[in-house]
Amino acid sequence: MKHSNINFEEYIRQGEPQARERGLAWRTAIGLQQVDGLTTSDYLLETASSHIEGDITIEDVKAQIDSYYQNIDKREEDSSRTEEADKVAARITEILSERSFNFSVVEYLTIHKRLFAGIYPHAGKIREYNISKREWALDSESVIYGNAANLRETIEYDLNKEKNFDYRNLVQSDIINHITKFTSDLWQIHPFEEGNTRTTALFIIKYLRNLGFDVTNDAFSAHSWYFRNALVRANYKNIAKGVFATHEYIELFFRNLLMSENNELKNRNLHISVSGVPVNVPVNVPVNLTDREQKIIASMQKDSTITAKSLSDELGVSDKTIKRDIASLKERGIIERQGSDKSGNWVIKH
Picture 1: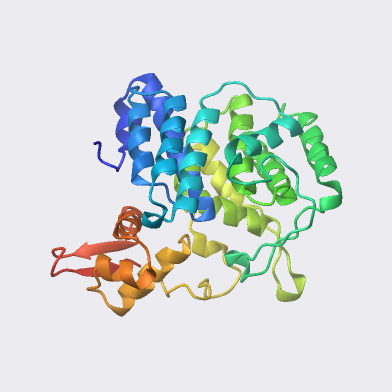
Picture 2: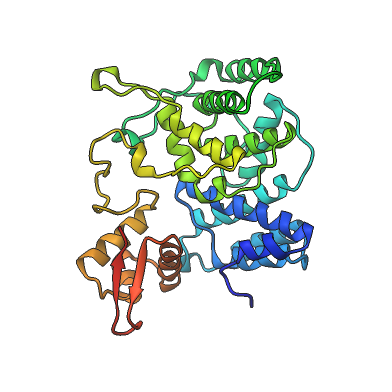
């Protein structure tokens, strides 16, 4: 069995051209799950590694993941969300490998349907009611999303306006500024009940490639949570509180993505409050954490010697799930183990 931690950089730097392309696609697909606080399983990583190396096809990957979740003991995993992350990551990888693209409402809806078929009952369907979502960056307030009465028309309007836009004679910074605004407006419509950010991100990646951009750096894979929070800030204003909509944060993301700049992308910069620390998240801890990861951090702050077994008992999940969460937190530089497994302690890195 292969090690569950894929060295994407190794594949991308030294692999065959096809292995490099598959590695880039998987890195983006797995990273995008963090938009909704999801983490892929060790099994998915092992299967992805086999696909990158050319041992199996993407169809084999999807079939193996389906079989895995048909046979898995549901009590041993937080299976519903992990299953979603695994299946959606494989589907994103498949779509990224395809050269075809149609800049249309139908394509946008089809991407959502392909990503979430069998996961959401509303896959590919425009929502029929208005929604709001509590956002960390807004102190639990919500962006005003598109009105359910005219969502399709609104998407068509934005896409038609973009189709008619003339990029000729624009300098690079103006091009980035325009793409930033278009992406922000499209995301604000939020036509689906769930899965809007991953769908929009994938649609935009395909569109940018269609425009000739080489979208291969790690902006989407490493900063997908920032991407979402930046879109939130681009579409929220509360003049009474002195908060104004701003595209500056999402523009930094796209400048990194398309101009290979190295702007700092920190979630803490996106919070509307002075402290930048959300309710129920431990002080000095990054905000791109799932609820369970927040609880793990809080427990480690109370007891730096706490074991994975104790965390498993405390949170009511399997040892395997806790170990996967801890590995993810370590890889992201959020926690560090000092000393041995038996006598060491956890350090929360600030």
